[in-house]
Structure formats: C-alpha cells, structure tokens
Length: 444
Image 1 (tube, rainbow, N blue to C red):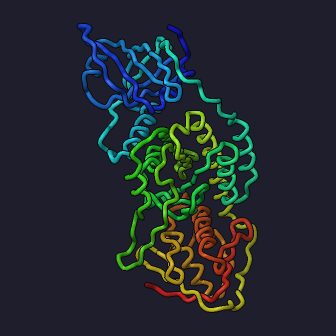
Image 2 (image 1 turned 45 degrees about the vertical axis):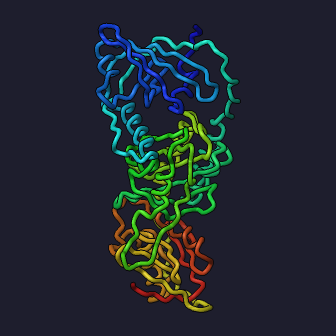
C-alpha cells in the first residue's frame, strides 16, 4: 500500500461519490454504511456527520476504530483512511459548516428540515493509503488564484462607489477566476430577504429579484453565515423553481410584480459565500456553473477572501455616503419634454409601476416615490443620502441598513426600464433625479 497525504486527496471529500465507512462492534462483528459527509478538518483530522443513532454510531462508541473508503471523483482512484474516533462536537466552526452544507444539499432535493445534523464526529486520521489500481490521469491543475485575488483587492481599494465595488468583484470572478455566472445579493434585515444588486453571465440581470433567508443554497449560506458549496449533480428543479417565483406577490389588488431570478435553470455546481463585516451579515456572493465539480475548496477560499474585502468596502462606502461634501440648495428642474410618464404606487408594499410596467417595491420603491413626489410638487432634482436617512416616511429599518445598496438597486432598475427617468451620482452622499418626461403620480 502507498501512503499519501490527506491534503492530496481533498477532492475525494467533496461528496460527489459517497464514501463507505466500515466499523465493528465490541465483539468484532463488522458493519458497512454509506456516509453523507467526510469533512476535512486539518491534515490529521476529518469529521463525519452524526445524523442518526444507528448501527454505525453504536459500533463507534463501543470500538473507536474505523476504516473509510474514498473514491476520487475525477480519476476513480481508491483511497483508504484508517480512523480513530475522538469526540463529537455539537457547536463550533466545524459543526456549523457541516450543518450548513447538509442544509444546502437538502434544499436542492426538497428535504430541507428533514435531515438534521446532531453532531460532528471528529476522527484522527492515522493513515491514508492509495489502493493499487489503474486510475485515470489527473486533470490539469487550475491556474493560481492569488494573482487574481490581488488584482481584485487592488481594484476594490480604488472603488469610490458601491457600483464600482460590485463591478470589481464580478470582474475578478469572471476575468481572474474564470467564473462565468455570479451574482451579489444584499440583505434586507427587516424582512429577512436577500435582493439581487449585481450579476454577470445571465440573459437578464435579475436586479431586484428576492429570496428569503434560509431559502435554497443562497438563503442557507445567509442564515448560517458560513460558505455552502454544492459541487455535484442534484435534483435542482424544485430549487430553481422556488427561486424563480416571487417571494411575495404583494398586494392582492396589484398586478404581478415578479422580477425573474437570474440563476441558472439547472445549476450543477454552486458556491454561496456570506458577505460579513464586523460580525454583521451584509449579503451573499454567489457563483454557479452548469458543470459538475466546478468549484473546489480553493475556489471557496478565494471567494471567502473576496467577500471579506467586499464587506469592508460596503461598510466604508456606506459611511462615506452618509456624509455630504456640500450643502447645496435644491435645484428646480425645467419643464420636461414629451408626453407624461405615469407612476403608480401600491401603498401595501410600496410597489411602483411606470406606465403599467412593474419597476420595484419595498424601501427602494418608497424612496423613488418620495423623489418623484418632491420633484412634482417642488421641482426638486437634487437630493442627499442624509435626508433620506432622516425621512421617517421611508421606513428605513435602522442605521445599519445599506442605503447605498438600495439606491444602487433603484438606479439599475431605472436603467433597465428606459432613458426617461434615472438617478445620477453628483458627489459623495448626493445624487440627482433626471426626468426626461413629465411625471404623473397616482396612488393605487
């Protein structure tokens, strides 16, 4: 037998091919079972999922020795792990990540909430053996990710707007890391939803589409605040359908207000990484692929690093956006040319429609209604983040809510709708409502 290092066979721990665990009871009677997770802890330890008090569990408590058989998902090479049970953890980083991974897998198969992780069984890896055979050639090594991360971090550091920061992240994923399908969602803490603010690689941007925290792989990553990676084929139809449906149809009296979710119809690989700053959840960075085994542990490491930089940038840009550089007097707009453009608001959820086409809802909808109302009544075009933050009618959740993300969402939705109504940045913490047609406001 040939001894190898555990770190050399981490691809075997991706879960694409179930592992087999052999144990025996106190009398030496063997038992063999399939494993849902073999989790890499460090070079000398792995963790196995404890979900049921079954024969395997009974054996390992009586006799702590076990053997696991692993199959490499790309080469079909066989490896044998000689293990010794140490302890069971029901809290801590390893347990939380295994729990989130299990929940992410369950969300794909429609079994969310059925399979509950009771604990993480920690084993010492005493020996790793390569079983003799004729495996397939190993695939070519992926290009180094460090240079791409450095370029992305430098570009993020030069960003002066949230728009620029998000573009820097998506460009790093697409150009530097070769990830063609990706998106960024920001947390609405008050309603426990995530709304899309940027994406790349999809037929439509999906800006403004929403999912619930805890819904699907993305929602699980947000709820558990740890990365969730799915790298093999799953039954994704129910998952995709759930996300493509509107989370909230809004008022029963309002027309349909669904923004199509931008994700792949049948993703075979997914990686969702929470965007955190100072312990707070800001959103989720998501990568997808139509191919199996697209994202490995090094891709996860890269996205975690990138999401950390993005979280810090979002916090700094939010603080900068709340501080005005000038205190300019309101600008009175000249009369707008062409025919009138009608804006309707449904007060139940602040849904805004432009000429019967749905635009946006929620806080972003309330912001647009305030800007349009002030423009019609007072002729104003120039506004500041600070006055929005202090306006009690907007219902901003609290000072930690990312107002910059709300404004960017609104700006991008207006860009997609057409050229006659848009938002332009005019300085730090200031922006302008540009109106190309006269506005007619109507409450529905």
